[in-house]
Amino acid sequence: MNSIGCEKSDKGKILMSYVPITSTVGTAAAAAAAARARKEEEEMTKYNSDDLEGWEFKIMRSTWGHFGKREKFQKICDEEAVAGWEMVEKFDNYRVRFKRRIERRSNDRHMQTDPYRTSPGSGGSAGKLGLILGITLALLGVLFFLVNATGGAPLPWTMITAVGLGVIFIGMTVLLKKR
Image 1 (cartoon, rainbow, N blue to C red):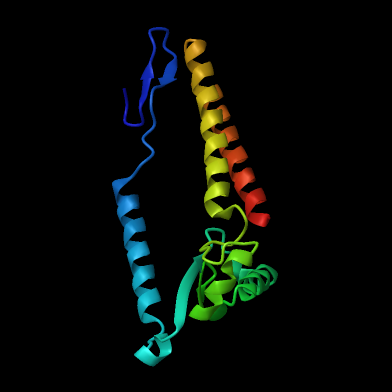
Image 2 (cartoon, rainbow, N blue to C red):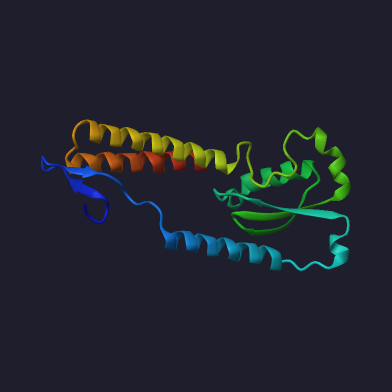
């Protein structure tokens, strides 16, 4: 078996037994970036006790960068305004802080959307990402089943199929991002 998890069968064909997909370095980098973002969110606007009295705050996050698209950003701000939320600051295309008077909570039960949502859209980014990952994993499962059921496919066909799955994955991501 070599470093990427390939081994040769007794017929000389290359079999894919596993491909490592996680990275400790990548995970640590993502955690560090998230910690920096949280610190920035806490330190960007300074509040004194009078500024906080009678207000509640929330930060909306968009995995897809919706806040960088003027029309989508305005639509999101308008939706939040219905529940009494006012935009305080836009950190970047992925994060925006809102505030509202505590008294506005009394109207929450009449809202059509969740007034405490923290991601834009009805399904949220997690639903789209789950759909992409689910379809991709299903396609990978079919690929590995076919490779193992046929006693191992020649490497070029395995690679062509893997590239094809990658193209499908990227295509689905682009289509969902445009929504």
